[in-house]
Length: 236
Image (cartoon, rainbow, N blue to C red; front, side, top):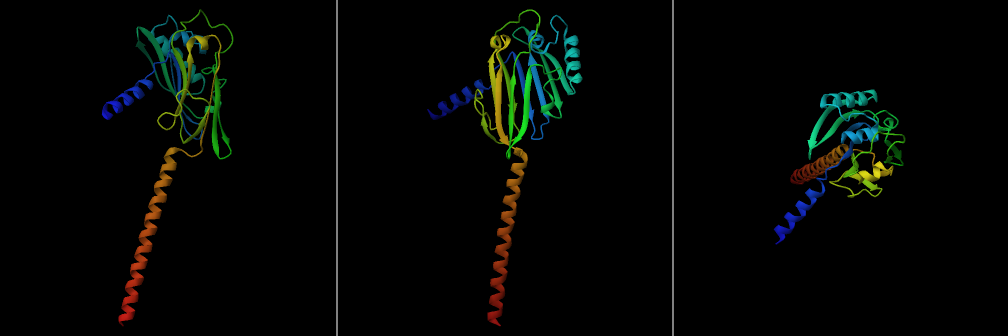
């Protein structure tokens, strides 16, 4: 019975993490503000939210247009591809950046306001996704979900109503219906994290543990040596 319950809970957790988004920004951040971004979406949503006219173009033309958009924005493009899901095309771009604070206002991010700033001894991530004003072509299909997701570099102390809370230790995400996004509804996000990366925090803990262990060994050797010396002197 317990085994079946555990299997059910694992399955439910896996299904929860396998949501397919129609439009998605996925950020991998470092504590210095650099990182990577993956953007995936249907071509008509790229046009509606980023002003990229890729509808009706073949795969090569879509890839070239998306690459040019991100390179013009100062990002280092790693990969551009077009995939298929449910008979629909999805344009995918992955790119690296040096400072997440420099992304707002760039041609590739007219729909995103984002900042990562020091706050006391921690870091504060906050921002908002919203459809930019102005005409964006014919109406797009409003079905499905869109999301903004973050893989944060350090311990998460708090978040502003992330949809699924903190996932797997350091992942937070916000999502809404594509229809609401197309209607202009903004999607605000925010989180407070440690200013030290998980990697260096872990290294620091290991170093402290090793130092403590060596200290104990040193004290033990000293006591053994001292006791042995005392016995020799008393025997003499």
